[in-house]
Length: 147
Image (cartoon, rainbow, N blue to C red):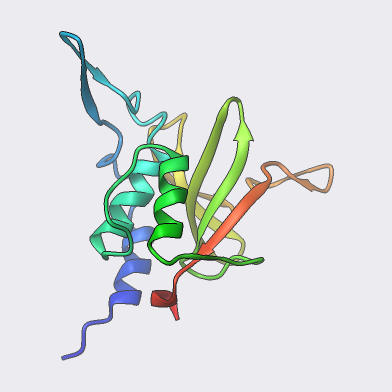
């Protein structure tokens, strides 16, 4: 039997829709325990990093897009011009936050939905407004694992 890691990776991403596994991350601040992902509102990097870590495509999970990007580069991910199946997309800042998710083909992506607190499928530019992408893509990362 041959294990199909790439196919499993893509299935894990697609099957993550509406899963709340990455919606809460606890930390201690003084004597207070706080959910630093704010019940999933700020968990996009945590979501992406857990899947990548599961497949040993990064060293450790992260809670910020900046930390994820640094880790992607350190782990051999390369930037590409156009998204390919399984690539990681980083969207430009909007409402004070950058965003990260996965490209799943056919102009679709999966990333954490801050309003719902779990991963959702959406257009890879969040749709268009007056012919322009609603959210600009800052970077697209690709790993040879995905060949």
